[in-house]
Length: 170
Image 1 (spheres, rainbow, N blue to C red):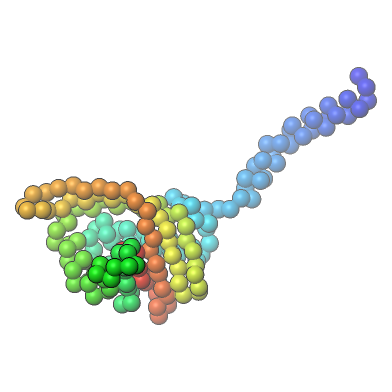
Image 2 (image 1 turned 180 degrees about the horizontal axis):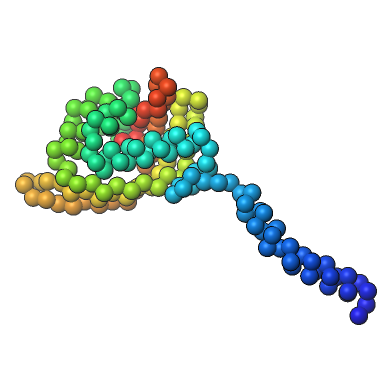
C-alpha cells in the first residue's frame, strides 16, 4: 500500500473515532432554551416567560384577582383594527366587562401556551409572541357549549414600579 494511502487511512480512522465527540461538543455549545419554548434561556427572558405562564394559569383558573394584578392601568387594545376605533378598549373595560364575563359566563377553560419569542423593545418594554390553544365551556341561552381554537398572539409588557404588567394583547 502506498505511503500516502496508509497515512490517509490512519487519518480517516482517527477522525472517525473523534467525530461523535466533536458532534457532542458542537451540540453542547448550542444555545439553551427555556423548557417548552423556543426562547433562549437567560434571566430576562425567563422572567417574561414565567409571567406568561402566570397569565395562562390565571385564565385557566378564571382567577380575576390575579388577572387584575397583572394588567397595567395603561392597558390598551385596538382589537387588531387600526382604522376603526369603535372596537378599542382599555383597562377599565377589561376590569368592568371582560373579567366579570370570564368569571360569570365561562364555566371551564383549558388553555395551553407555547412561547416562540421574547423581544425587549427597551429596558422597560417587552413582547412575548406565542401560539396558544384554548377550549372553554360557556353558557348561551341557558345551554352549555364548548368553543375551541388554536391561534397566535402576543402579550405586551411594561415595567411599572419594578413589576412587569400586561399593557396589550389580551
